[in-house]
Length: 265
Image (cartoon, rainbow, N blue to C red; front, side):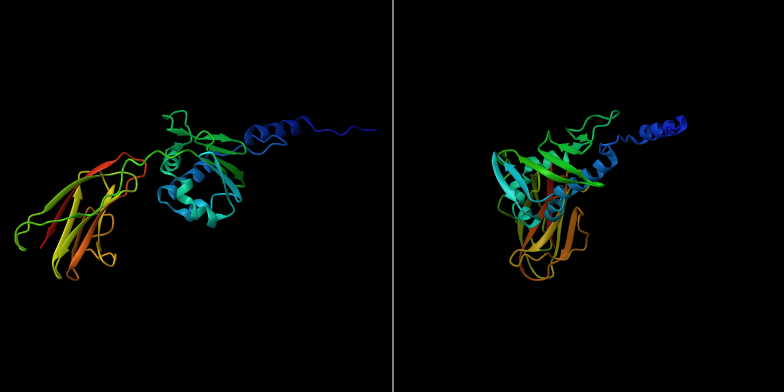
């Protein structure tokens, strides 16, 4: 009887394929850092923009979320969206957006992500995302107790302009914005007047200014694009108008200071 076997060259070729692709029979392929960074980037953007639908779509259901020691069953994406603020607290949001895959030639991220063959661990295991084809699905969420809020929303401040209608001097204010903070100001204006609100004192486009009809809540069309530091527009009707200074910087960045100047002509 003649024995059948692999030739020396065939064995060498197979060994080379294993060395190149890191494939071991009976084991899952190693998780690719590119896939990890793609998934992590999507999760970070969704959390930073409070996109409940996007976050809910990255979770495998049903899931039981551990919240301060309590087990909360979540059957589907709709249920997750309804309880979003309970699960994605300020602490969890910062844990996610400040996470990253360690690189040998760069400073380590604040929250290093642990990459394993079958998934990734974020925040020392508070979040586990299981490998699913070419992406991941979150299968574990452990929510720590929330710290007391340090910044509390304030009632709108009234803008008082001195001088006559034609010689109004700017009214100036200063404030601090953290997290998702918005600070509001009320100004009385007459139809046809030109209102201008400008903010500065911070870097780039970390904040913007918007104007709304106080009674209806409808935004007022401006002559400047959204995201700009200056809002300028003609008042459509005599009424009170709300000026909002809106923080746009990443949620977990340090608080920013701003200066607001309001003029009415």
